[in-house]
Image (cartoon, one colour):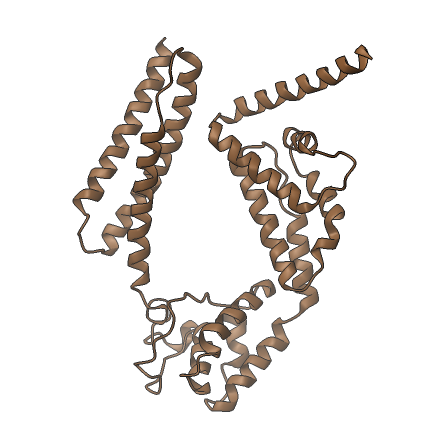
Length: 334
């Protein structure tokens, strides 16, 4: 019973920690959002997430050790979700106040630090959308298209800006090799289109970009343990590369069986076996989408149950053995 008491004590500590975080938020409910306060909220957000995980683990262990009705976790879960949403709202509100040009690309930064000084010709009353455009340094070709698409959407298609202004904005979002390609262009209207043409010529290599996404998909690490976090990370990486390939016009839907065979070998034994059992028609050809949907459903189920990794694997092994024995029994009965 000592183990039961230990888990109950840890559970109580988690609940007390969440209460303290709730009290902190109530105390600073109307406080001005400052860097210090946001940093404290970030720390407490991490503490809150850890408390929730620890609480679930303790609850699972207690349910194994103690008979009777388990503690209702809905109240704790709802409180966690509410607090997490409140913290995220405050953090987002703080960052939204920072203008993209002022925060990431200060007009006072010298050209030597891979930024340009924004001249007086830039209209102070020109309001750009509050979208953070990441800098492009030319090291990864696969990042050029997303950068270019976002820059054109926010800056390039902005009819209130002249081409000279667009050129200054373009230079402020480039660094390294990418900036060196256009930094010596004269500050005239024609130079903006020439700069875009130079960048496209250097970085719009569809063969290399497409190949890099395919290699990235094939290099996704194998799932050694089929935990919810490992499965979700695997699915996210595959979806990211598939989406990128589709945007490049590649017929990914025609690669179903090829990708399915390659990716299914990256799954752990329990997850792969569960996918085969889950299929309604063993003779029909499955699709990549079906595999990804199954993996997402499995991750959700594992998160809902909340078992530690070892218990998940033990249960999966027992279930797989039971199904195998059942099938052998059916054959022997015939």
